[in-house]
Length: 428
Ligand code: DGY
Image 1 (spheres, rainbow, N blue to C red):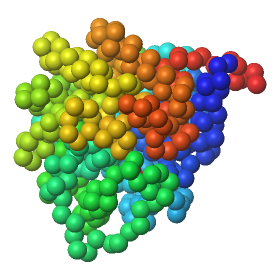
Image 2 (image 1 turned 60 degrees about the horizontal axis):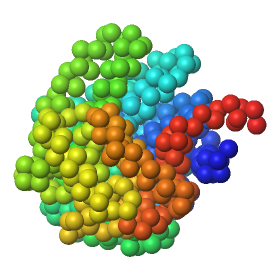
Image 3 (image 1 turned 30 degrees about the vertical axis):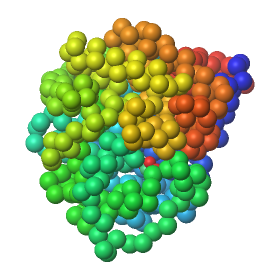
């Protein structure tokens, strides 16, 4: 077996905490929502039941209202801030009180589509839970029925410090009564590669507001300090809903079809609201002011993955893709390298993330942009082969950034190499 593939498997095994996988030790010592989704894809390549267990354990933390929280705290750990006592979720297992990009239905569909009757049986067991999580997004993050999903916190987008959120964060006031706190992330990772203190103060201010209103989704939507539309969440949810429809057909869940089709129609219409004519691309947008972000990101490129946009819009997005790839040695940066806010090492303000590359590549391939897709696949493999399973990578130098031995990078590496190693592992 190729040495890097073996290493990727080892990373997933080392990050296994018994039924769930941490993104990496110390920096992220709990279960994260979309991390677990992508991790399941990698696990599935060599251990199917463990992949399903990853998903089932995440769903075990699903809230009664259908929300799958972004972090599940099964124990306290002083290595991370803000931990369970700060969120105060008041449920079991304790969790954070907002969600994350909903990749789960797409992951499940892939496991069923490529899998066996065992996979279909496992999917059937959790189908109603997937429905509930989609219903929660549609009801709680789009209560006005606009077809545009709102993010109530940059953490919900998973792209925490992307310049997309700068305008929304500007409006967030830091309350005087905000508890003082000590960040832990910058003990584990170089400060230059993480969000700034100003950003963290704002992140904690939004948490402070949420706690004050008892995490009431309605109040947060109408009065919360931050409300932005994210092409990442919008396109990932739309794609996941289309995959949920495929799953429903496959499992003959006919009673669910109308509701799912209705969601697809709404989200497709709503996606048009994210088209920024000035930039000629899909961009984040402030829900309250209607003001657009002005940068092309790796989330903008997920329009291909969601199959949205007319022909002209797709051509414009493909042209952006080519232009940006010319500026970077390694695809695909999280922020436009020609924009003044680009920073090649600071988290989501420039670096490359393999999970995003995976979704962009898949979308480009499906929409017939094979050459662009190939470049992204090749760069992704090159990055891991030379820099290892880092959390994220410098798009210019190719150097590893953030946490090391990262689960989702390892998982996507296995997925991109289409590794079928289940046999070898069972025999070992
Ligand atoms: C972090 O702690 O950096 C996470 O992105 C929040 O989910």
